[in-house]
Amino acid sequence: MSMVLVPVSSALLSFIPRSLKVIRVVSTLHRVLIEVVPRSASAECPVCRNLSRRIHSTYRRLLHDLPWLGRPVTLRVAARRFHCVNRHCTRRTFAERLMDVARPAGRRTARLRDLQHQLGLALGGEAGARLAARISAPTSPDTLLRLASARRPSEIGRTPRVLGIDDWAWRRGRRYGTVLVNLETNDVVDLLPDREAATVAAWLRDHPGVEIVARDRAGAYADGIRQGAPGAVQVADRWHLLRNLGEAVQALGNRHNAAARRAAQHVRSYLEATQVRIAASVTLTMPSPTAAQQASALSRARREARYEEAARLRGIGATITRISAELGADRKTVHGWLQLGQAPLWKQPPSDSILDPFKPFLGRRWSEGCRNATQLWREILALGFRGRPSIVRDWAAGHRGGGAGRDGSVGQFLPPVWPVPTGYRLARLLTTSRSRMNAEERMFISHLLAEEPALAAAVTWAKRLNRLLRRRTAESLNQVLAAASGTLFARFAASMRRDFDAINAALVLPWTTSPVEGQISRIKMLKRTMYGRAGFELLRARVLGAT
Image (tube, rainbow, N blue to C red):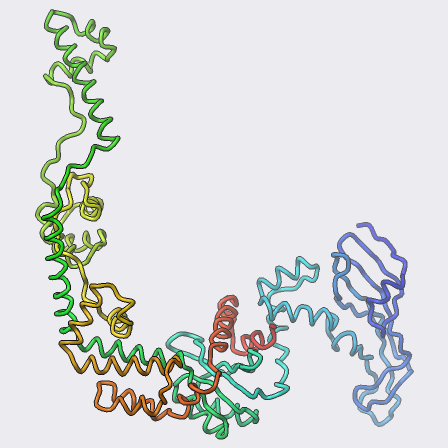
């Protein structure tokens, strides 16, 4: 290995800590070694704090430093031990501290440690180690994770005035934590290990000064805020309120399934009558042959002409060999044609299909709205069908496109499909404006609400609350909640009255938990890139430290 002594220049000295004096620089192809000595002639005893100039001995200390010109750098420090001049001190000798360079007993400089600490916070162990190797500051993934978690995040310098609070899933359905976000700067303030009211209250008591807290409608957070910051204004998030309203409308619609089925049948009857009228007024025409069908017909005509010529020659006494030479065909082919007595038909006419016994069932399921060929195949498989899924796919293709499938099946007249709206679709139809519906949806809603007056009154109130939460009406919250009396949403309105102040503040103040949701997505990303090493303290350090 070649070794070069590099002259010590002023440019190099500017990169060396001021407390060290460079003796020489040894440069190799893969590393730079810088020999240094401390500039100070004295050192302070770590116990009694007295200065001493009495050198006891020297020893070598190797410190990894920031890379230089794409190569790792090592500082070889000629460190010293001193006698303590205080006779009453418990330390007779001590090693001098290089506090501005490295920690006691450390193997890397403070600035390299800080660089690797930031790599661990930003990228984690594996990805951070790969990048560290590329920038000539190699270290192991475990070291990066240890550096990231060993340095605790700095304490909050100023308590946020406006705080957003929400939960995040450590393990969905089992374990949750709490994230606190400064809504004025959109920065994460802290992470809490659970979502209990006592934990939130304790944090707020330790950080007084919060004036406004935006939250969802979780009762634990409301109780924690009242206990920890009783003077803070609570703001319920309007998106969560709209979601609660949507879930209530969906649950109400599910309780009227029988009426929804009758309204959907009314729509199907109308569509069927319309379809019959259209079918009676349209003259069905045979579709023109495709290019493949035309090519098949031409090929068959050529085969028939060659067979007729072979039969004629055979009739005048020609041998098979002569006929083969005349037609340019193989002797076995000519012999087979003459034995068959006609030109061969490569495409056999369609025969009875094993699907025929199941076509009535398939037609009924098709009319009910099931258009998935694989699902239909599974259902008739349970009824005894032994064919492959491709047979059902061909049947479905013929009905879906109105043409013929590969098995020769042709689409037939089937009742119109208009499935019964349930769940989210029914809730959307109940709350959507009539101008945004098609004719069938308007017919369905009109028939359903005419049959169920109580449902119609509840839907009218839900639309009023929706406009209020979207700030599209001049009504007050008290007026809208009072109008719910006597409707199917009376209990839902009563639950909103218990959180009246927070909901009313949401209609007046601009604060929401939307920035908190964005930070939760960032927490999920960090947690998933940590390869199972996401302990709470490490995750908290990465969330708060990686900016």
